[in-house]
Image 1 (cartoon, rainbow, N blue to C red):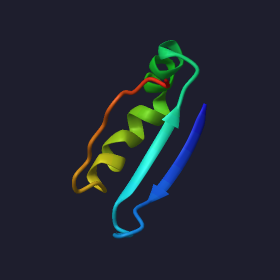
Image 2 (cartoon, rainbow, N blue to C red; image 1 turned 135 degrees about the horizontal axis):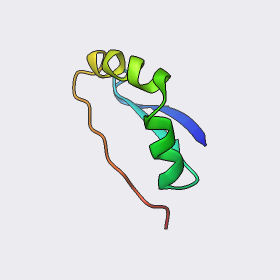
Image 3 (cartoon, one colour; image 1 turned 180 degrees about the vertical axis):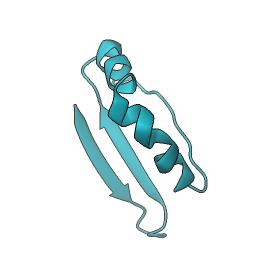
Length: 58
């Protein structure tokens, strides 16, 4: 897994957080952990315009 946080050059309040996972099984395993379940609501509450998308590397 790899995490990268990007800051928009024109607006430092716009952040893009990219997670790169080995496969869907790894994503599913992460999503089922107690840490994820306990913290996802906090993360969402800090985000004013949260957008989540799943993408594939080309």
